[in-house]
Image (tube, rainbow, N blue to C red; front, side):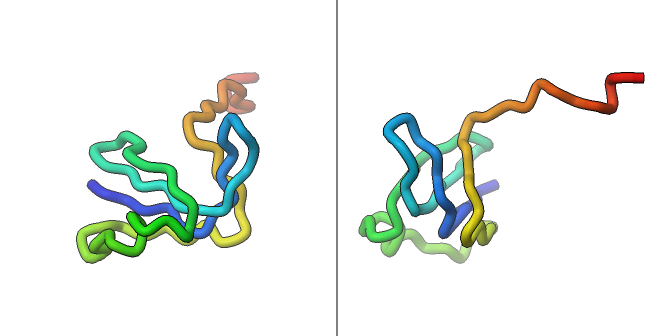
Length: 71
């Protein structure tokens, strides 16, 4: 499956950028700023599009806390 998470505020090691994440085979293949030409050239027909407009996206973040485990 191929996915584009677009228009998000993406937390990267150097700060926060507004851009998109391209995911292929369940792995992040690109993190790009919205103005980057690679995003414009990508044929979106074969991709699931997720609109993250105004939301923060933190690639690679794993939440180890789960209240369901506490009884």
